[in-house]
Length: 413
Ligand SMILES: Nc1nc2c(c(=O)[nH]1)N[C@H]1C(S)=C(S)[C@@H](COP(=O)(O)O)O[C@H]1N2
Ligand SMILES: [Mo]
Image (tube, rainbow, N blue to C red; front, side, top):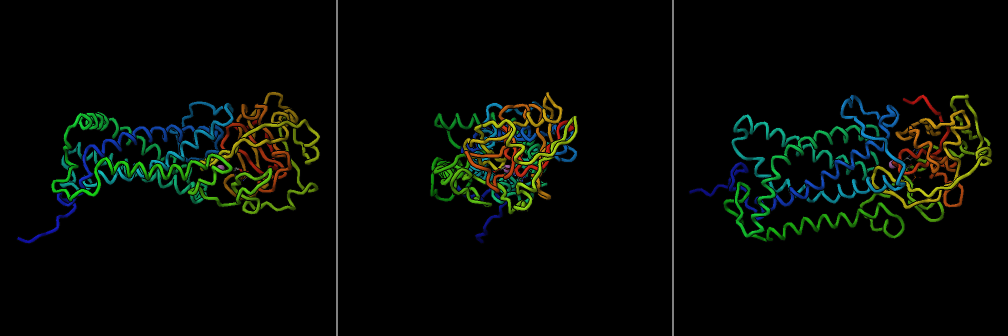
């Protein structure tokens, strides 16, 4: 008799004694909760981008019904996006070991023969393709986006958006089919039951770790990712623990402007010549026409302060900074809008994905929404948007346009 190593299509090929319905069920239930939170916080982030002010902030092609928009993103509490997006990114990173372990736990099924047993089985396998493909796609695009600083600035947003719908649709179908059995398995095993089912290796290799130990290992991996990621939502010492956060662009440094910078002035191609007091002008357009203001003109207007964070879609955020400047609604009033309308904000930047942004009327009307000139008691630094930048409570960082050149009120919808 020849001793032939079995092929992956044979159950005997898979020998880990860890595989079984219990391991798969526990990981599946963790993902059920975690991915639901990821989907909800992801949709919230979509809403926070003001997609109804298309096509400025949201340029997703053909989004149709999927572009539904449940509510206008509020400006209270001012840390809302900091929380929702911090949870989205940190939880996403933390779930990576769980996702990989879950896929590992069911990999024998990928090779099971015959590949298709019936029409129902074919449909089930197709849905698994969308589930696994969609899941890997969402986690990969998410990680690339936060780690590599927008490798695909224009396209990440629609890719992650469409991927989310495909993935979540398959996920809902899968969860509906499998959750009852997973709950039963966990209950049965807790009551001292035996492992059973097709995932159990028929000829298991000697164990190097118990099933419970393997689960702790996955949990330990998640914990490690969590403690090296969560600091991105804070500054100071806690930020130092965010070892996995890219500190690309500029280091925060110290002093009043010493908080995280996304794109530096140099990166955005903003030159000192354009921002000097004698060259820079703010063009404000509205119902009654256009006015052009120097920085000195702005400083003569009523100045107000607000303590607000920067919270980026990449998941990092700063604590509240003290911004001081002119209220957006006062600038709207200057050009004939007593009742604040939407506004299109454009920066000096000639190129780049974030050089302009649209804000909703309620954001313009909030007394804390400023065209900031100062931060933490000093003039804005070049990297934080000198001579003037927008800051809006609870809005994603991307809407807080730096190096502002032009404000156009009304006529956005
Ligand atoms: N003109 C301009 N404004 C911009 C950006 C940009 O690239 N260009 N980046 C935006 C993004 S994505 C974020 S998160 C915030 C970051 O602000 P900060 O660099 O002052 O922390 O600025 C926003 N404003
Ligand atoms: Mo951002």
